[in-house]
Length: 199
Image 1 (cartoon, rainbow, N blue to C red):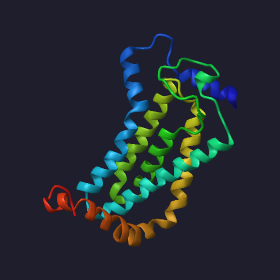
Image 2: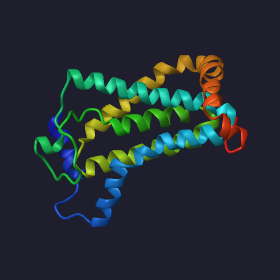
Image 3: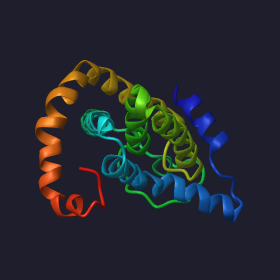
Image 4: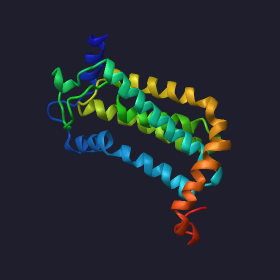
């Protein structure tokens, strides 16, 4: 399996003299685009429809649960990153911690899949699922992950989303209307009063 992992990695990883524009794009996708996900969720909460909110909250919780599971996996099984082996070309600085699974792709896939399962939020979910595949490519291209790290990320994220599915009603009937929305209205009372965000 490791030989296949290495072979796939070398097929995707950047060459010794990659196009600078491609490196810049891949580096942005690999390291920075992830910060747009919480911003997207926040924007949909603040300016989207109220009935979207339970789905948004469930998606965020799925992403956080998946990241927590990743931390547990890393405690019990360490897998070196490509530059620690070493193999291929590393174009992005990264801590020498365990590579499996990819946190970036785990969070993206969990949030995207959770949203895609919500009819009202399906377009946003499908966009994030596509983005997660692009980020998966980018993180292998810049040399901070192996392809199997991405397979692990998708697996962990999918399992976490499925585990939370039975709790969707809880988010709809209790967590969002009784806890999250009252807290939101308290914290954003002035902005809501001015009509800058939805109540």
